[in-house]
Image (cartoon, rainbow, N blue to C red; front, side, top):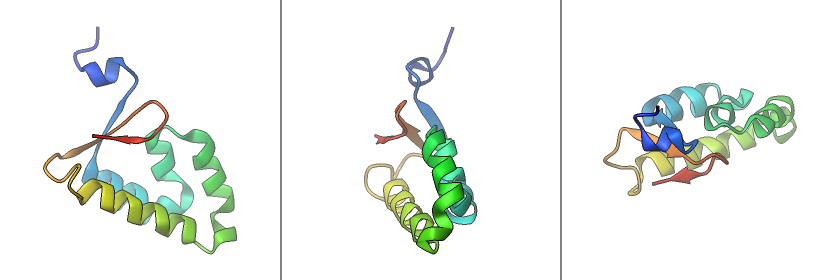
Length: 90
């Protein structure tokens, strides 16, 4: 049995500092942030094609992750929750 109702419904919980700074900033160019969100297909696409965008894809994803994690929606929480499709939820 699942103790966490989010986990039982297929949601992913990730520490926001780990996600933003390690996943998106340092390793985002390799698609690690997308893998952490459960978006394997986009993670592979980002891994193989990020160089085509001259790293702009990784930079944009990092900016979005930082705004989402440290903005009003997640400002007081230490975790970010993603739905089964990898979208940010509150």
